[in-house]
Image (cartoon, rainbow, N blue to C red; front, side, top):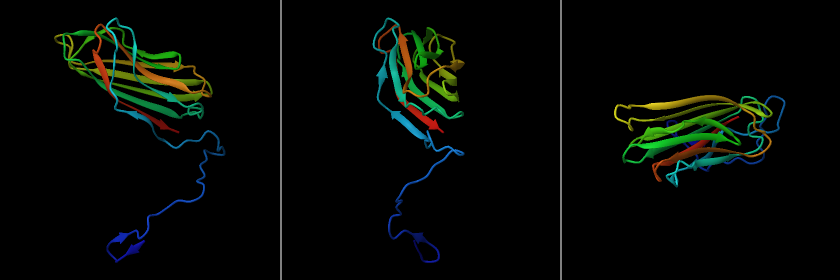
Length: 187
């Protein structure tokens, strides 16, 4: 680095060479650095009007990512419901074979929505999840804001890759569209 007594600047870009050692206590296995692990701004919408669930955004959580107790995944989905007559909408968040959150059919349209999910490792094949989905204002006259919360204990093997997904169904094709999806990891 060069300095003139007031300003400092690099004459050459700094580089890192060699291995970087990371440990968690005395263990150096199954280590990851916290970061965003998935992001998408692709548009995903429900494909039919029969209420059948369609993936609105999913990510594969790599095996052993949630092996250390306290490690967690934080997922965030954001989207919009169509500007049309009030529709019947349904959202689900699933992790592997288990449903974390299910809104059931809800009357809502003309509004944004936002879903969040935290999955915390509590054991080798155990996790605890906390989810929240909200939308509004919109839908039926007088409906300002609506939300669904859940807290669920999960039993998914941490040693295999597992799909985390937001699914949506509605009484009209294209009734809602996911516009942004991100997944963060905290070791």
